[in-house]
Length: 350
Image (cartoon, rainbow, N blue to C red):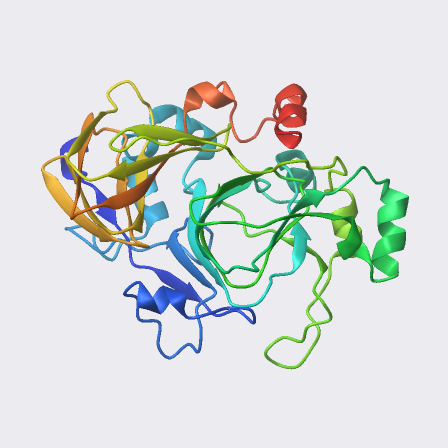
């Protein structure tokens, strides 16, 4: 059956948001009649929002339907044993004209206690940011739950938060439990667990499109929050052209940066995983399994796990995020088993 698979390109899903902007249109996407596009979901297995294949004979099928047919050949045998027929990652572009709510995501254990499949750990790769743009990345200093509740009730929770000033190319790893927010005038790529669970803590008393204040999740968030302070949440890296630069590595995903201006070949014969390439700058192409897929910024392609290698090309210069799930990072636990508390504790303090 593996001979029928090939690199898969997907139709984007557009999400209007009260804080959304219009920079995604400048990348070549048409989301009319929406007045803005706060989020472009480039690849999703979230129920009701499954990405649909755009290219080849599998066009018009969505990602989870293909998982039912191709199983481990598509995402890797161990990954299929772990995740089943729901694609395990959600990959987005986020365009924030205004600041997003201050929020937190549950970890796997809390999410499963509350009837969800998994929590949400994520990472951000900054594509554009204004001179005054800020992000919230944890607490500035140690606070107790009681202190946090007092500041929240008084409307002063912002004074507790650790603020970063992002620049294009910056990377931030946001483990489940870390309080966070994207500020205004920021365009970024987000790699995350396949979950749409967000606990909104504070939203600046901002009305939604219907003029109503958006729902807060004050009590639900309390058990999810890690009150450990963040001194420096930025991932520090130095990249070399036409080489693989690690950005994030955790049980949920591995993300690398590839800045290329000449052909680059990657060997994945020993990796039991799919590989996603998300173009974040320029024009590129991915060649694998006798299929060439062109990409511009904001587009992605999924290379099936049965592919042994890929070749990457750029028109001039391009940047790609390379994303996969390495079974060696999660020790082969199935989705139905709780994860090791030691690595969860380590992840939360990263």
